[in-house]
Length: 291
Image (tube, rainbow, N blue to C red):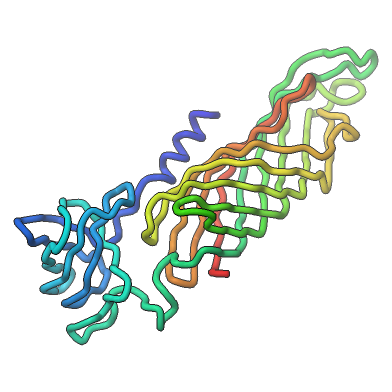
């Protein structure tokens, strides 16, 4: 299961290639593939590496269709670098529309320090539980359970420091798993656990880059309060308030100055006891707007 989590996380952290990028550099000139992004003569852009670092400054000198020529005014450019508009230069000349949103049209992508919204998820749940004899109470066997559940939460993001963001979520977190027919009073019922928690999650995230497509990795804790519970694998009275350790990563995708799409893959590990061990892998997506 950990291997599955690592693969999903790696897929989430892959950079997207739709942004305008440098395809060829010759001396102080660079050929740019706009990939559908508008640009006008006179616009200035930072050239950004895959890890989000600004390495050069370029000024657009010629635009033809989806291609552009730029003069490198500072730093060193290389093929594959993407473009990030230098603040205050969009549409400064040439009579065209600004390349990216300006303050008068709502601000640049992701320039706010706080966002709120909603996020939903789908989890793959697993549990290992000691099954007791329905008559004697002694441990009879150890069974593996698995299943899936859904979640729905409100979301709040806040930039604490440069590249360090806090994410808080609150809402319903489902956990559902089932196994063989070894539970119940006669030990002939299917082993099941179906729980919905009221969840409060607190994550610290390291966010890479300042563009409109930002991978991140981080972790934190969640507080879980059971809202509903049905189980043959566990004594329902033993299902109480608990916590979960969360490790994850994902993408903050800024579709526009007013809309961010949060996407994440998270691994949740619940506290281990003598009776049970449980975890989940959750894929989540939602929306957020500036606050």
